[in-house]
Amino acid sequence: MEHVELTVPEHAGGERADKFLAAACENLSRSYLQKLLKDGYVRIGQTPVKSSQKVTANTVIDLWIPEACQPEIVPENIPLSILYEDEDVIVVNKPKGMVVHPSNGHYSGTLVNALLYHCRDSLSGINGVTRPGIVHRIDMDTTGALVVCKNDAAHSSLALQLKEHSITRRYRAIVCGVLKEDEGTVEAPIGRHPKDRLKMAVNRQNGKPAVTHYRVLERLKGYTYIECMLETGRTHQIRVHMASIGHPLLGDTVYGYTKQPFSLQGQTLHAMVLGFTHPKTGSYIECTAPLPDYFTALLKKLK
Image (cartoon, rainbow, N blue to C red):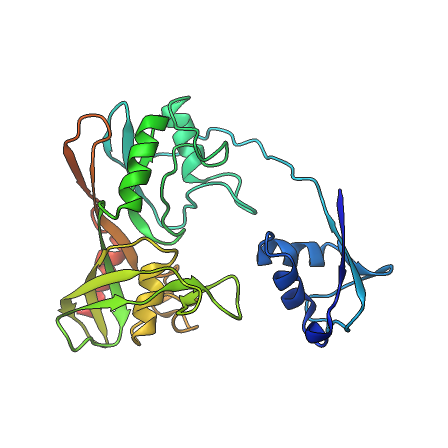
């Protein structure tokens, strides 16, 4: 177990303990620091420190970091909706509520668990044992097309296409409010939220360039059905960009309204079209994931 001593500087006196730790330990995620605080691994003397506790200048805080325990990721016989598959890549239609790869609190029931069962040992290893084959992700409550690589050569090719923004990605979404313009572009850098490190935000000082094009498909009662086309692939990009122009995604309680209408499970966002250059043949592959049942039913209700 690693032990770190942190002395609170004068300028940080009076800050919340979790805020001070987040600034002092940039290599640790805020969620992980919150867990360390909750589990008593952060102390002043013999007294555990609480997240909301104000720290005093010149106080020494003891932080213990447990040795990382690599969980075993096991294959699970979970049905997959496969849009395309060959010996190099597989494109799946990810369902709502499924996490893409194992992480804290999600070590089973993920897409990776299902892929390990379906593909056996045929997944790229570039991203390590917890993310075999995974070259890009979509959020747990976002549905739709996701490409997974079966070998390292395919992974390197797809990763380069993502970096060069040459992959076609078109999403369907329902946003709150009625958009006046038929189409538009949001070009605003995205980075960590300056106050809530668990969220993303338009961050003009420290964010990375992000561009989202959108067009109206249908105006509904109090909502708008749109298609979004990504030039870049920042975390939560569509959710953050649409919220930034006053039209958050319906069901998005993180970036939109806290009340969840229509008994939804998260945001109404679907990765409908995914197109890429095949890593071996050089031919263009384009897959379309049909709208999930909840989405089509909701559209009928809103009409």
